[in-house]
Amino acid sequence: MGRVITLRQALGEAMSEEMRRDPDVFLMGEEVAQYNGAYKVSKGMLDEFGPERVIDTPIAELGFAGIGVGAAMNGLRPIVEFMTWNFAILAFDQIVNNAAKTLSQSAGQFNCPIVFRGPSGSAGQLAQQHSQTFESWMANTPGLKVISITDPKDAKGLLKSAIRDDDPICFMESEQLYGLKGEVPEEEYLTPIGKAAIRREGTDVTLVSFNKMMEVTKAAAEELAKDGISAEVIDLRTIRPLDHETIVNSVKKTNRLVVIDECWPFAGVSAEIAYEIQKYAFDYLDAPVTRVNSADTSLPYAAPFVDEYLPTPTKVIQAVKAVMYR
Picture 1: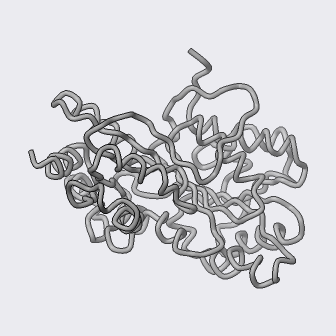
Picture 2: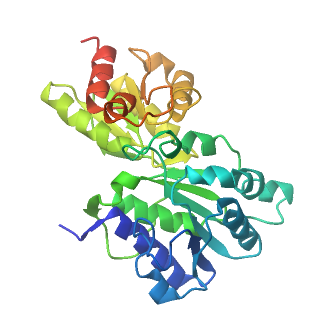
């Protein structure tokens, strides 16, 4: 068994390694320096790289996102950490109107190599304004790449790839997964952007998910196996560009698809996947594509409502049995 570290350590290693490799890379955001990061992802980085490259910002997301975009346009490679993507709503003007459009508006003269990162989605009883999932929002914008991670090894490899990429990237994490442990190689490696991962091979149904819903999906697959149902589990990893080829090939084998997605159902990632499958694999389907989403409402505060709102293994199992006609 190889080295086991947490997701937060993997992300911190990725940033530190890239900052050692390239002096143009720097980190900025709320509490990233003196406090070692709101979730301790940047622990020790201020001591190693100093305040010129690990920069505490005011609580002004629009302002420091704009500074990051300007720095990227002038040849640097900023990493902008948001304490949560819920707070990044204030910075959407810079992300959507400037970062995403720099290359096209300059007719290819300027690119914008910047990574916007932080936790997306719910994190327990944090109520309506702190529990939203933004992968589908960002993926709706041409010019942005969107990565959403759950596995420590992939988190490190994908963040390193994102920092080296010449396009603006939205890197989605989860507050509830920072302590998740996994095997992470010590040697240098990169994980390719735009390629999904098959986490479990199966023959009866394809389950597709991303971010912390992967934990829900894997738990459901374990229970389904006890009932004699073999589920193939796919972790998207990248939302845009979407690796529909891996999903299509799986559906051609299993003939059934359930998408587990914390995004709201209307115009979400699961809706796009359903469209792709009916376009490219319709003749292989033995049942309609089924989605398990968060409820189509704002997330209430009370604990029983949180459980009712989010996808759960039980809801996934029910959806699978529906497409299996069992």
